[in-house]
Image (tube, rainbow, N blue to C red):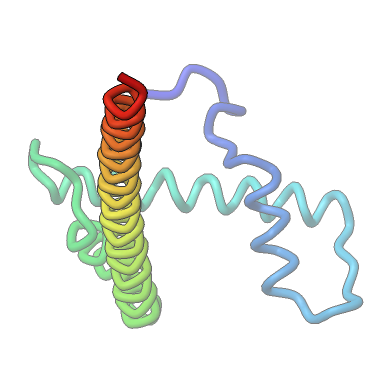
Length: 144
């Protein structure tokens, strides 16, 4: 599963952000405490993931498996906040998807509009050339 103990560690930037968000402003944390929290966080994630994987029974691991694992490892008090965070994340993803689709539609409309404008300009240019040719032909006929 894991070849080296340091493979269990989560990225430092993520751990630092979590610690800063959890502590009141102005509170400092020693390097040893930061290291202990980082290690505990990584072990917690690996343990919970392993338990959820056992619940998934050889199928894709889902959010419900993680929530069930939280209950199984006796962290029931985290289930409600996790469900709320999951719903918020799903709403955010849905909003991003809808915004992306709307942006694509707007881009397509803009492209279609530009093509129509270009087509009209070309048509107008051809009409102007015909008018100029007709005027030249009329002038030549008058001269003859």
